Image 1 (cartoon, rainbow, N blue to C red):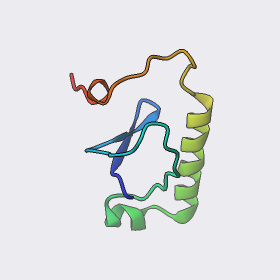
Image 2 (cartoon, rainbow, N blue to C red):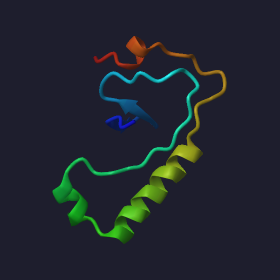
Image 3 (cartoon, rainbow, N blue to C red):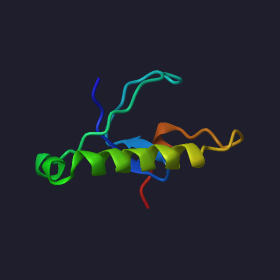
Length: 78
């Protein structure tokens, strides 16, 4: 399954409907959505950026007592 997401506030947020059961685990593969951008970034730079992203995710986990949000709450726009 492919789901277009945006990394925002320490989480990958689906841009549209995502019919996945709660608790489902998967692997995120980062691919630029713009082919020209993909060729403009060297593989070493891409690797560095991905490593930094993973480090940021690990260093900023959600607190265990954080509230569980509904899909509507997660997609509210101000």
